[in-house]
Length: 171
Image (cartoon, rainbow, N blue to C red; front, side):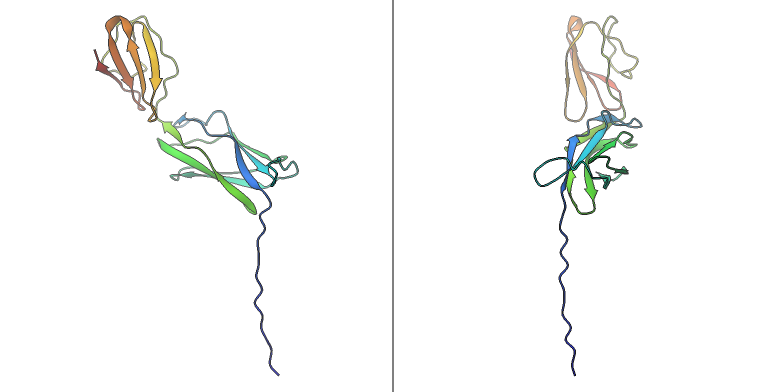
């Protein structure tokens, strides 16, 4: 006799998808992203899978950060994502049997402007942490994380780049 071998197909059925409930925001090297990135496990109708404790892994592109958290009631919060290299990143959330998700892009800088106040004569090329300004106004931030503003009493425009260097660009 002869035997007949048959091939069997294995089909993996995905059981839900991952969603960024809280997208990553711009941040500073060496500091945890704030607010924390939150991933939800959702069913095919878009409802949070309250019974899910799936392990969810976040991986950055470009590489630099990888973290895994088990979901609790279908939600995983990543409160300690710290980047050591400045750049523009995305995060991919993945878990076995779930459709992965990719975040919006965000920027990590070595320096962030958090307070801009006036009262001192402006400087022209100092670290942004040491400079003073007369009547700073019109603050804007570009997609690269550079901060621009006007020292109105001197009719000067300044830029503070991602490394914290202050440059007078007009006036």
